[in-house]
Length: 213
Image 1 (cartoon, one colour):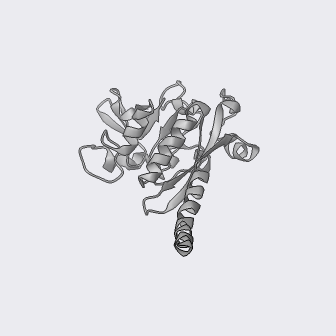
Image 2 (cartoon, rainbow, N blue to C red):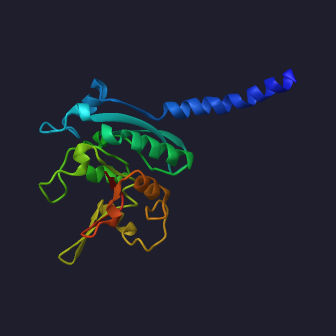
Image 3 (cartoon, rainbow, N blue to C red):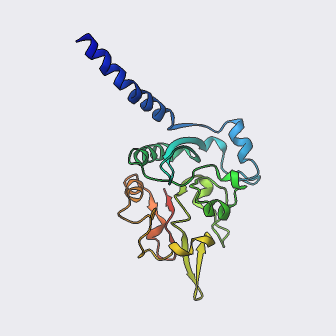
């Protein structure tokens, strides 16, 4: 009987080791000097009006498109940090694939470059494209998920504006393709359940990657 109990314990060790690793992969912390050094002059511009105390740094595990477990990172508003941790842990448990998740500062806060690389990101102090209005990303209250496959689309003067520009093949949402966010998608359902709005439901334009609160 003792031998059976020992064998059971040995079998459970890898499970508990993975559980501890998974929990450690979903954390929230204040913006420290190391993270701020990456952000300064990029996502956190010199004229940024958002106090650092309102932001936090998240680390979340996710599966990439090849099925590898990756350590992702985000800067967001503290008021949605628990939402994001819960959502991304649920996505991880479901093995939901996210192409890439690093700070947009790795792209010098260039939204087009980040989206083209299919990078999921949150905080970036900037205006809405083509306006002087601050984006919800400026407050860390919006996040873009798998943006290459879920682009921003707007009709203007008979032309279709697509961002990122490389996302043309994914504009027609009637087509079937991998990583598409729609109302049946788990990512959509989790964000809506947490009180977020989806850019794919907007009337004047469609921003299929975008969730904000």
